[in-house]
Length: 445
Ligand SMILES: Nc1nc2c(ncn2[C@@H]2O[C@H](COP(=O)(O)OP(=O)(O)OP(=O)(O)O)[C@@H](O)[C@H]2O)c(=O)[nH]1
Ligand SMILES: [Mg+2]
Picture 1: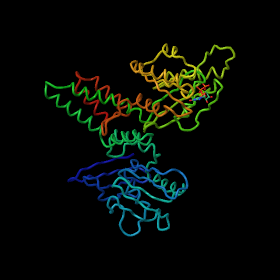
Picture 2: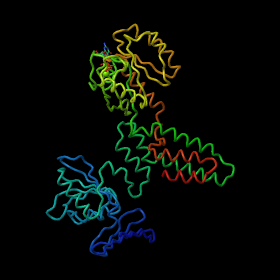
Picture 3: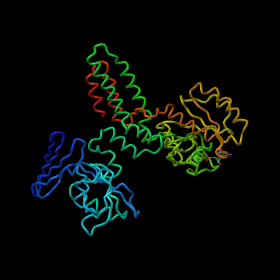
Picture 4: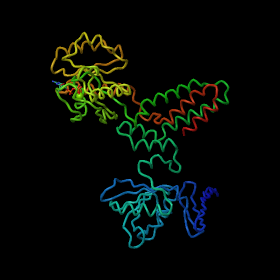
């Protein structure tokens, strides 16, 4: 059984924890109002001062690296490390300033030599030998006194003392972000862009509670803008899914390889070469995408079609149905202008005319036709996987189709489904239930 007490004495916070264990123990720690550690005292034989809230994470990759870094974070970070750390010289960790390095040994005078960086009163980094056994021993020591071991990916999702939910979500998302834009946008949210916007909307709503004549339209416009931002925000960790589709042998796999810059998918002159879905994760212009090559379309009722090819075509159909963007590939050599004119264009469809190196004239014809197609909100790009013509343009078209309006620098962006659901709920509670909307928005923070 754990009891935790927080006391406020003349601007000084006193945190005390009582643990029921084999031996009853009691320890207090004093922090000033800036959370700086002042003093700690043990009133029993076993100390577990809020250890469970102190997390230990191995930040470096497993392996025999020269150095490893272990982060210790939480109210008891210093108390925990001091149980094992014997500094060289007299100054203990708690007496050092933030940012100071402390050299010493772990586990006594004959223990492993290491370096501790005191980041703050709640955060330390232990720099030790990179071997797995050395790191494991340190992490286990800290676990043995109650600290919680958390994998580096999970560490991001834990709301560390004092940080908001959005901040914890941003840290978690940053550890998974693949492209530079995703990392930047999430860093803005980590710095408080979304949090400030929501706080400002809440303040506006609170004002509107007092002033009878209120301007809720402005609030709704700002909420709608946030909801809009989720189109990009919610894809920062789960990339857009682009599916290449088209008839057999039109050059889908070749285009996939040309965009990848390496031979990801098998190419051959044999129609029906690709059978299964072939996927790759790529970064185009700083944005991350999952691109999927599929089996070429042909009649599944055709005599002699194998069950494997049939299954491949069914998988392709499902992939197309679940795609964020379908890249329809048509062969300039075999696709007639007539067929092109009769083709059904889905709204926002992206069409790649392939192999223009083989038929310049037809490529040109389709290019001229293409000029009339933007009216249908679709885009046609002439390409050659062999010569590389149009590949950069094709990549640019994919990026523009998925991210037509990238967020402005430093702007608030909704980036998790939890945030999206709560903000949508708040928007639906307006204009009638202003107080409920305030409550819902506070839940986001
Ligand atoms: N000259 C030329 N040939 C190409 C080009 N793109 C593809 N090809 C050739 O067209 C044939 C089919 O290419 P693939 O990329 O395998 O076509 P696919 O659409 O993936 O075919 P399936 O997997 O069978 O549906 C191969 O012989 C390629 O070398 C191109 O841009 N120019
Ligand atoms: Mg193929």
